[in-house]
Image 1: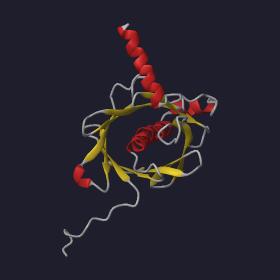
Image 2: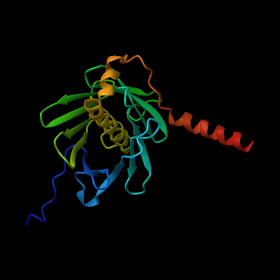
Image 3: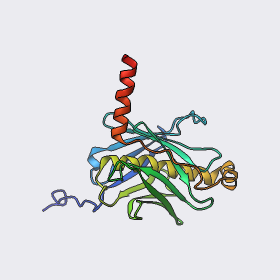
Image 4: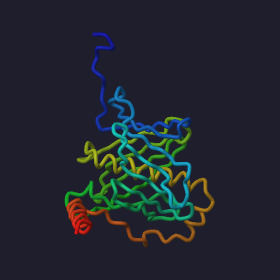
Length: 227
């Protein structure tokens, strides 16, 4: 059997690579096990990064649907995101350590959102961001290459939701928002002062709205418009 005829080895867990194209100022998210399919998601970075503007936009490559957006803060060490129309917050729990939390419905088995926690492990070459669920079980790891120009890193999923598209898209949006938040914190003096005056963990999360309640609210709004 020739090498071309041999079956390609697949990773045990779903793993995606993140590559940066500086010419187009975009990042491409591709499935490592399906390189022939090309980018699955495209991350763009608007030049107009004003305080009220989005800092990052994630779209599906197949239909250009916006999956979510991330918003970085020039002073505050917290960050905000929008996932499929639902606003959320990524809140710092420590001043000088990477410990962030967000609330998730995609990783919950009920209509009540659960708290997801992000931490990081900083090495000479890589900067690993790990997300765990409410039971401290790892669900995703974003291994970023600090010195790479184009190959930003890879995102590996684990646990029962590893193959769930909605859960994956949540990690793409929030994981990249956290990554660029930490890049900004390490290069921006204003975030240094923001950390000094921060009150980690005191600010309330923006709660994601259950799908059933979201649908009910949309139907109520439509009836109000036509009445």
